[in-house]
Length: 234
Image 1 (cartoon, rainbow, N blue to C red):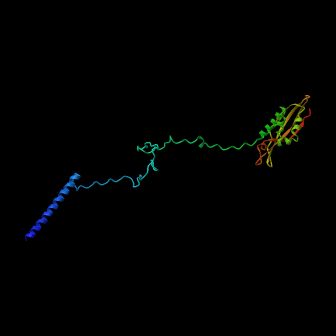
Image 2: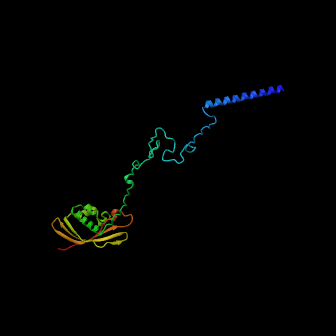
């Protein structure tokens, strides 16, 4: 019986020792943390934005590769620092002046009129009066061939002419032929020869021009095709 009592007393002493040790350890832990050990630890703050580090809806700022130190960073219009300034109308290049100017369409050349044909006859006699025979010769069709003479023969025909003048009448009706137009111009010519004699002629010149596709400007102009003059008797 005494042995059982002694064993129970030993167990009780061991339990008391363990309880005292646990109390000291708990007191020491509380002292090191400076508060109640049962206080909950603070939770970590949640990061803003998506898990990629990019904003959910990129704004006007830099959305590509990170900007380098050399990049010009200006305050944005919304006051956010570190974003490049958006270009304004003042910074955009102006379009060239000719970018909005459209050249007008080319106007087709006006067709020679009957009055133009009368002007050719006037120019013809003005050239003869000025002794510019090559110029007068060229006013015949085919570069002068329609006169039926060479340029030398044509000029020689006025060797005895001292002066010449012509009254050009109103042109007639323009007639059409295959690929051509014709008009008759009445004239009255006064020629004074070197011997002093005066000769008068009346008649008409027929002028022709081409109207076919592909005709040159020279072929489309009025030129003398033939002449029908007779001398008036004194």
